[in-house]
Length: 443
Image (cartoon, rainbow, N blue to C red; front, side, top):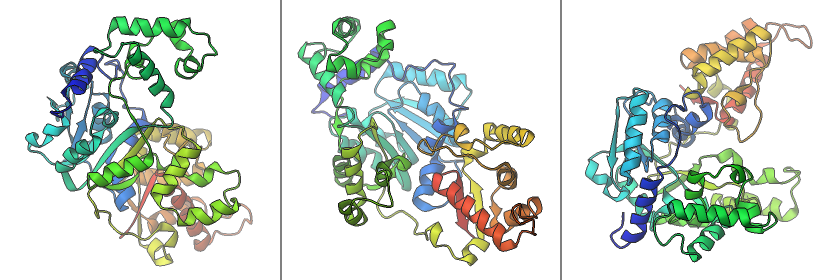
């Protein structure tokens, strides 16, 4: 990747030739894992930035550092009609990626043994770049971001991630220990793995490093892939959110959001978000997004990855917040579901809920709400989902459908007014939009 860092780059290449990553069996498919597909859908980040739906047909997507192709497969399932291009340093990994996508009969894919810094040699521009579990291994991550920016279309989006310095610190200690023992002078292979296993097994259970980096299941069955991607990972480094923003500024890229944005709400860390201590009540409204994220990770560094979206500067489409919409905005609104929420598992769950008159367990099928449980009343789900499975719908059409389904107010037994029905649907759709299940636009 970098001429002045050939040694560490060569070690990384050797490591992933020896232990290609991720070691996911060929017969394991992400097709029905809607949470994974949601993360890898171009529609997710595009709507977050622009409040607009995008059709993946004909789009060009790069999986930068594709490894054995499991994420490339997820990108293919999550973005129907798109072409997937994967690149990786490891020839062994690329061979496995080609076999994986061929096994599932995806033909609109190509894989290249190529470094990130040679991306311009492809002569392509991408609508979306997925660079997953790679950037924290690269000696100069800002240059890697610049290389991706060079092949990103003007309105394209990059998803990448860095290891959290705070959450990951115990594994960095383990890597330092095993480097001090000489196990990482060369590419760690079987002998180094055996030494790690023997060391950790021989330690008392109360020893801090063992307690925090050696799960119980490792005592029963050593996980070679887990050791190579944790205790013996070459080039691994951690970052803070200020360091993330610094890298983006150096690469002249604009931060869009954390990819798991629902989980970075600092106010939810407090027992009473509406009654914060004086300092926090005064400081948080004035804090920048970067400052809020840094405060969050100092208080609660539980996420291994700083997982983020970025893109070219000033490409977001200005839009009015849903909370600020007028009655006229709602009357002319167009409603759609996230493409992943239209997939067969959701349709099957809706049919089962209708037959049993149960709630639609939306977050069980598409777990995207940061751990929040989301279920829908079956009447509301029956109003919204069947027509939206087919195509986007005007809000007014859904409102008429709701009045047919629920003509009577169940509390008063009086006819349901249009205003009551409209407010209920607005509240429902506003909640689904905030959680990422529904898309709202104005005609």
